Image 1 (cartoon, helix red, strand yellow):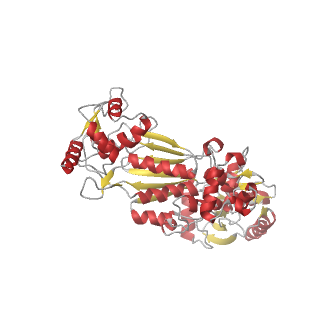
Image 2 (cartoon, helix red, strand yellow):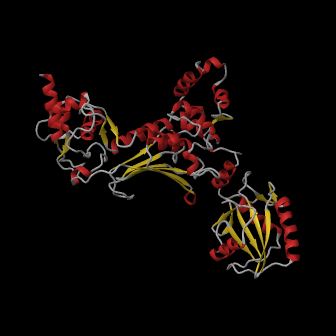
Image 3 (cartoon, rainbow, N blue to C red):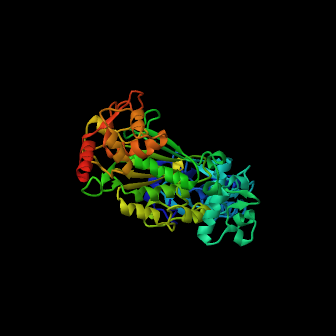
Length: 498
């Protein structure tokens, strides 16, 4: 909210008709300095607002006398300077209406949050009222907004050097600084502390998320929950693919991109079926948005990043609304304020993270249909990528290629990507309808996981094979057969060999 120094009489009338809200508070009179200080602090700790004195709760003007205004000005000065830490500088405006005079007190959103009263209490707005903040995480977020503390620098309790993958850290340090950690002559704890990754021998959030052996054990909330839904709404029970993406931020990013690749359509990039495939939306878009969610999420909020794939869109939801007065429009032009400066500094060398606020402009430049939503009431930021429209197809080909290895991708009769050597081998052993075990045996492959990842999934994604029971992808009676596109691909291969 913009707390300008003036408000006109017509604007005043519209406020009174609209009633109280989180940025407009009515007071018939004020006489208690502590109560007034709490009101000022609540506005300053939020988005700012106006206090209208001389107005009843229902918006009816009661009016103030000249003596009232003089007394309230003195009370206001005392409350703002002596009963708040740090002090505030509210401005006032006296407006004469037909019903009487009203004092308007303008309070800007504070730059030095949190503001506390003389008893050390922190107040914030809660709808049209105010409330006393007691939750540790909420207090930490207020300190974070003022730059006094950053979540990524908070030590993680019950951790030590043993919780870090020092081999991964050594590799990172050597690549970045072109010398080994031992060449610095510093003990490892001191070196990590100098890099902002440890305090008093305890790794912080940044260290665990970047180099932890098992971050999900120490910080279980900081994962990515990925779900692919069969329609356009989220559903608790009906989904095609679901995975908790754990590990370091690099591992979460890599697994997140893999999840998107198997749940989005692939299209040919050239006229030949051997042309490499590409995602229906440029991969760059998801690379930038996913990295931004991982690096800039609010680590004071105990919640995962959500990666949702719908038939018409992809949503990436990160905990924590935008810092201070930053809005989505500014993000599109590269304005940003790093919430986790230590983590961002190291992520620049570990992830495809470019920093300097370039991620969002890069994503929107590659794909225009992106909505950025700062959802402050829910304390989250939502990036929505609209998927391209697809013409209506039969029920069997509508299935997104999700639901694990046994799913049927959308196909159009043409091979939609590159036929790899593994897929070529699979095509050559296909005879009629075969079970997974029969195909694997024909290929002389021992490990099921390798078969699924390298052979079966790519073949399904390319649309060269299909399931015989597509409505029950995990059926024990499931078998696979060549599609028309698979027959053509196999025929073309044989023709090229002649």
